[in-house]
Length: 124
Image (tube, rainbow, N blue to C red; front, side, top):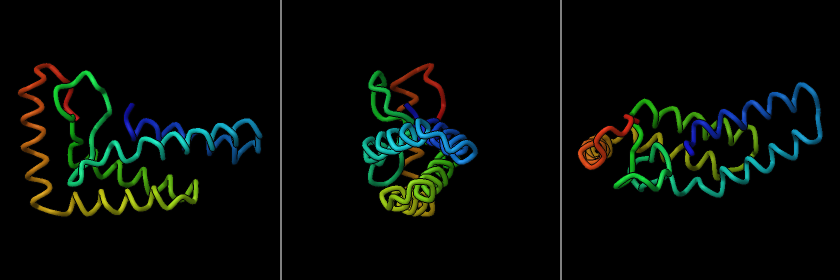
């Protein structure tokens, strides 16, 4: 699962619910938001964000700087949609990580180590 993929699905359900008022869409939106909240901390490394949670990799596949910015934006939008501060908190953390030169350098080295340990793995 990727966090950006999950957030896009939540946005689509939210748009459908807003357009139709469908009660099932509202319930699905709530379940999806709870699911995103449940896994949110697993994406955070303390200095960057993971690209995915795939257990098959050797090590964590970290997001590229652009993907990190997308994850931060997605979390901010989820905060607006769901009114859950856990998403705005994650968004702010990820923005801070992306702004720190030391975090960017550490993430670049981690992405290189991941690529060496996982030949043929997709780039984040």
